[in-house]
Image (tube, rainbow, N blue to C red):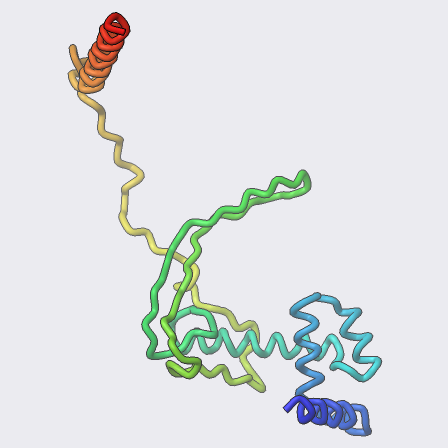
Length: 206
């Protein structure tokens, strides 16, 4: 199996670096360009490998990434929901919601970030469980494709809630002759006095 992959890789390199270089791209060269860009974000490294015949150029990588992003957005609009691309149909899914906050400590930072994070988990016992979602790469997609406002804007749940005045505490609840807290403190003091007296009696007996 390893020798077969080596043979396929060499054949793809030879095919790409012949006269068909501008008309036919092989999967290996596209994969290497996308992999390097996702790991290192270096246009110099990609263009250098392209010069050596080991990858597509940086502009081609950016074009493919933009097309893949457009296809994902188009699928989100079609499904009416935003969720990770690796999620599948027909699986039991659990969601966890938590607050996230990032307060940078750098002296050159300008802003912070606060929001909500939603984590999704699917129960899958086998690699083939569930139905995979397909994101077809669009040859010609609409320009400036974006998500609708309902994915990013939260409607107001109650009207006029900020105009209501806070309820005032009654005076008698704030000024009591013997509050619950003072009663508990008194019980603790009585228990401490009892323990001290018992210790003193024990010391006298010894």
